[in-house]
Image (cartoon, rainbow, N blue to C red; front, side, top):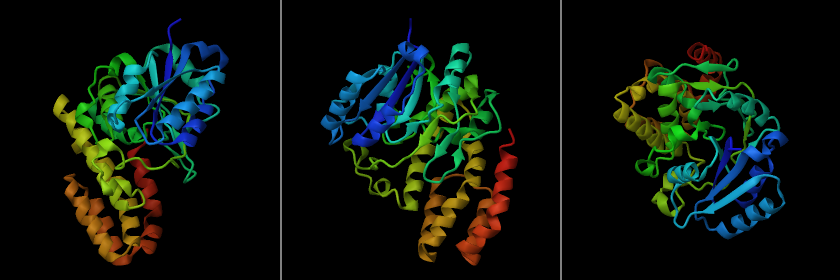
Amino acid sequence: MDLLLSVCITSYNRVNELKRCIESINIPNEYLHRTEVVISEDKSPQREEIKQMALGIAEKSDLKIRFNSNESNLGYDRNLKKLIDLANGKYIFFMSDDDKLSKKAFPTLFYELEKDQYNLLYAPFLNIGTGRVERKHKETMTMKSGAENAAKYLYDAILFSGLVFRKDIIKDINAERFLNLNYFQVYLFLSVFAKYGARYIDEIEVLCVGDGENAYGFSESSGQNNVLKNRDSVLSNIEFNKGLFKAIKLFDADNNTRVFELFGREYSLHTYSGLSTARGAGLKFYKLYWSKLNELEIKFTFLVRCYYFMLLILGKRQCDFIMKLPQKILFKVRHND
């Protein structure tokens, strides 16, 4: 019988985290013969340790585990494409090596996959660090196609863990243009969502741990980007956003759409947290952050300007208190599914 699902895991220099990820995969017995696990290690310093660990698990596991180690460092985007090429399943379930699966991850997903009606599926995830459930909507639903709808839900693609794509829909999309953008999955998401829509399953599948060593900016292919290296700095988020915006603009150029313009409204809603964090680092750093934010060439809403001046004048603590309820209302109104 043909494989239904390939669980595809990116790997870079995280032996223990990858082990935890693999061991969290709990496929129902009736689907074991129709599922595979594919790991693509991207020529990291610990590649040999990772290989021995993964093959050791494979020898003892009921799972079909295949391990690939790239001969050269491809970088995040091209390694994601490598997984697509390696996968034999009808559907691909992406995972990062420093995340893990919920114990209840697969039964509902397989039920949906058996329908063979959807080309993109995903579910909410639990952020272990904050304790919040993210990528969350009110109920299981099918979202309509169209660039405007894809822009509305684009933030759901930021974490690639748990995104499920039908392979034959994305297999021919080239990743070479995305080197060091770190958001190839966003282009895939937009490409499929805009044309076919998506299926949202209201059941937590992924536990986002995100505790692995940061590989961004360190690998051979990354250009030694010092801003990306420091994930504790709020400026690194702006650097990542540059890659995100380039990926969106590539989609617009390829499809004659205006997702980047529409996404500006979504991005504006999410701007407050970064501004607040920057304000907490002092006035000088706050002004630097604001100047870097305005280099992103995104059309901010009037609300963002209000955020900026409120924080500038009142400070972080008072503004966080004032904005708590309005922020919650704004997100609820915008995402009234």
